[in-house]
Image (cartoon, rainbow, N blue to C red; front, side, top):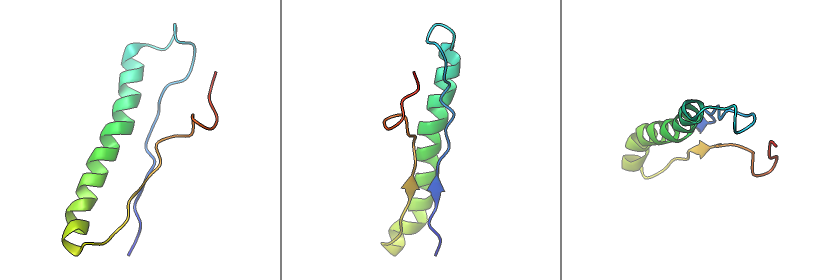
Length: 67
């Protein structure tokens, strides 16, 4: 059995006055929506088996912030 790892994400970086709202929205939707869709799809097969594991890596800004 494999362990799926979801690490999609592309939150934009740069000065707040330069990065557009559309760029932020696209990055956040990619992180959040991909996590939901992938995890939901995998859970449909794991729940009946009552076993499995999903790893979601959503970012490292908490550990290494980008000024």
